[in-house]
Amino acid sequence: MAVMGSMKQIGDIWGREVLKFSLWTLIAALVCFLLYRILVNNTTQHLVPLSHVERDGLMTVTLPASLADTLLRYEAFDVHFNPERGIANCAAYELTVGELHGDVPRGDFMPDTHVSGCALPTDYAGSGLERGHLVPAGDLKWSEEAMRQSFLMTNICPMAKGLNEGGWAKLEEKVREWVRRDSALLVFAGPIVSDGDSTLARGKMAVPSRYFKVVMAPCVRPVRAIAFIYPNGNSAGRLDKYAVSVDEVEHRTGLDFFPDLPTSEQHHVESIVNLDAWLN
Image 1 (cartoon, rainbow, N blue to C red):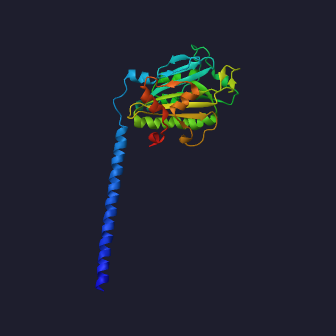
Image 2: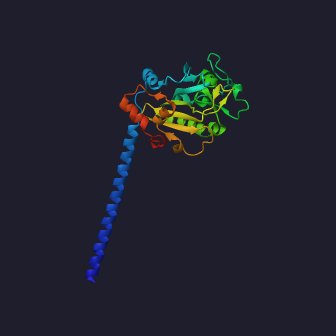
Image 3: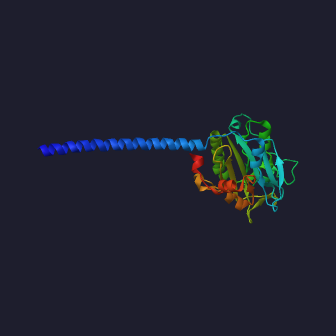
């Protein structure tokens, strides 16, 4: 009986020690997790806001000589317009957290009469396609003039309803979520035109088969960027279905984003597809 009692005491002591070890292990794991979260958050702390020179340098897009291009500088965004295709090659703008507020109502579609090759709103009649914004009107409610200019046909492209009111609209909302966290974003959007794509207005306006969006968070460290390519049609599904590298968009369009970045940093920013860094 004495032996059995000793064995029970040893078992009780062993059980308590195992329990203590498990508790300390759990506490250590929790501390490590909290430290990890702190370190991760510190890597994305906002630094000094970009100067105008730095911002303008990052918003530069280099186009291949084969693309006809007219640079249009509006109040809140730039459009690289292609008069031969009747649509933009690319539109670019900066979105800041302060620009999410405003109550300016939506405008009316109208041509930019100063731009050769600009489409008319009526060119879409009977096509079944919608007039889709490259720079979203929803990001420009802070300025009457910026809102008006967003409805100029130089900022509009032919989009299928499934894209314009589907994945494209959802991505626009995501960008607004991200800017609340990251203070400022640089956004580029445009068509991917392929041989064999259809046209409107008696061949004067291309109907792209796909669209891209490139987003950069320049005020966080490390600087990060991501891109998306959507088919011009139904675009249901999660973001990861459409996420690609900036390099992939460059390959498909011939455009060169962020040419002012040092080569090593440009390669790092443009070659990585890390959607988790944006969603978490």
